[in-house]
Amino acid sequence: MNTSEAIELLKKKGFKTTGKRKDILTYFENEDRYRTAKDLIQHLEETHEGISFDTIYRNLHLYNEVGILESTELNGEKHFRMNCTHHHHHHFICKDCGKTKEIEVCPMDEVKRTLANYEIEDHKFEIYGLCPSCQHT
Amino acid sequence: MNTSEAIELLKKKGFKTTGKRKDILTYFENEDRYRTAKDLIQHLEETHEGISFDTIYRNLHLYNEVGILESTELNGEKHFRMNCTHHHHHHFICKDCGKTKEIEVCPMDEVKRTLANYEIEDHKFEIYGLCPSCQHT
DNA sequence: TCTATAATCGTAATCATTCCTATTTACAAA
DNA sequence: TTTGTAAATAGGAATGATTACGATTATAGA
View 1: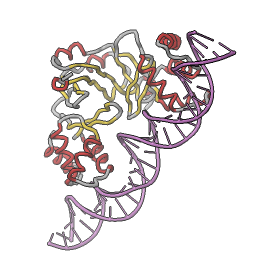
View 2 (view 1 turned 90 degrees about the horizontal axis):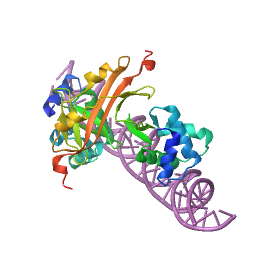
View 3 (view 1 turned 45 degrees about the vertical axis):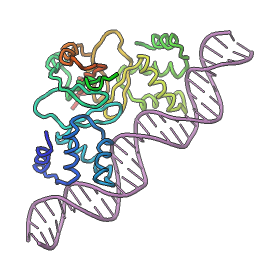
View 4 (view 1 turned 180 degrees about the vertical axis):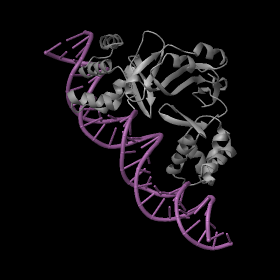
């Protein structure tokens, strides 16, 4: 997903396009890693003085809802990144810089067989550590 | 892990044994599922009127630190349960009651091969949904 | 029993997030 | 191009989980 695809999607769903909405999308497109609401606020305040928390959180939730962003919880804070929509996969997440690497392995087929009477709604498989460029002891 | 093993461990590590500490352990031993700090507070207030947040959170962190409890984040709140120490495994977690079922599948060996230059510190594999007894539409 | 210090209390502070109302803005229709 | 209206935003208060901290109490070893 990139900014213009996301804007298309928003239009198709009947949401309005605002400068702030575009800038939020551009931010995540350029960052390409997990970022918090605070990271986003700090970035947007440079160009949009006095931007409201409400705007930040409302749009983060909206984008998450419609699949523009994906989210995860890292040390008690929600983190967001552009959604990789092309196929199902999981992530290695760098604890230092938040960058991710896609992991193709998914053991859910195997797991489903062992959970016969369980109603599976969701699953999470994440690997945490340091990426090559953050290992400078 | 059960209450008496946990108390042994605490003694061995030089921590003091108090009535509240024992009661916290007993609570988790009996619950046998993921519970929040609030769940624990509500339970302890019945027998320890005026118990402090400090006591609750300090001990949750301590127990988590020494491996008596394991924790995960479920809808923005930390949840804790007695640690299953016998072998490495993952959990199906019921979104309704918090009960867990052990999953033996772990794809980390396979994953490690694809993350050659990455320093892996940790990983999380959790399946969410409804357990058989919580599926009463 | 006595003493050192770990544990706890009581409560204030913090921090992320949510909520609320008045105001502004995007955009569809005229 | 103008206008009407619902959506979006600002500004700030409220919430809820968690942390912090000085004063007090209790555990465990001497």
